[in-house]
Structure formats: structure tokens, C-alpha cells
Length: 201
Image (cartoon, rainbow, N blue to C red; front, side, top):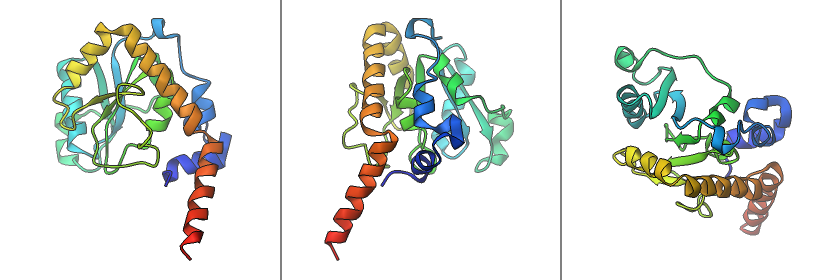
């Protein structure tokens, strides 16, 4: 099923502007050629790979801009991975060409919103599943990287070395989101889901 977050944003429509699919696709920042080339990520400490990402950012700040906005699971490590930074507008994410999507306690809710932007999504290999994953294709809609982040730097370098291909993948990801993850598609998904469920009664 679609996540609660995506469903809620559809039902509330403009009530949550920063996480509304229609609003995000209309605020995707500067054209591709004018975006900066530092990959960006913000979030909380809900998975050890997120700690590793922040550590990588500390080592290569010109390549990755990753920071925590809250500590909850690893509070004892805040001195190692802090300080906490302020939230930034979701629209400001799209000033960067590269968006890092990394799981938390579940699949990262932000993926649909990142896809509908016009930046390249780099998605961690995941044990989790969302309702649209069966149609989402690596190297067509996003660039995959290993669960342990061991090849993330390599994939970022690939994107920089193949700028036109990266731009085309970003565009394909955006088209996928527009054609499969907008409000009307979510309503249709629920309709079909409950229709199928009713057949089992």
C-alpha cells in the first residue's frame, strides 16, 4: 500500500506544501546546468548507514552534504556525528543535482518527492518495499548504490563523469513520478486494492 505519509499528503493537498507532490514538482530549483554538484541528505539517525553517510560527508564535504536534524536512536553518538542542523526547505534540496535516498527504520518516505524533482536520485539497495517498487527501474529512474554505501562515492563520480546520462535518468525518474505517484494515481491504487480485497470475501 502507499505509505501513510504519501496518502496523507494527497488527502491534505496544499495543507502540507513542503511535502505535496504537486508543490514539489513546481519547485524543483534551478535548471540542471545551474545546480551545484554536492550530493545532499538530511534526516534523523534511524539507521547505522545514515551514521556512515554523515561520516563520509565529514571526510568529503565538497562531495556530500549530509547532516542530522535530530538524534533519537544513537544519542550517545551525537558528539561523533553532530551537531544537529536546522531543517531546510524541501525545495532547497533541488539546488543540488544529486539526492541521496537512504532507508531509516523503514523505507525512506521521501523517495516519491525526490523523484518528482528534477535532480538525480541515488537510492540505497533496500530490504524494504513500497507499492511502486516493482515498476521503478535502476539506471532508468535512479542510480542504485549498495546497502552498506561502499560504492556510493563511485556512483557519485559516475554521475559527474556522465552528466548527460545523469540528467536523463533524473528526467526519467521525474516522468515516472508524474505518471505513477501523483494524487489521482494513489486514489486509483486504493480503489483497485480494495476492489481486489472485496473479491476475497
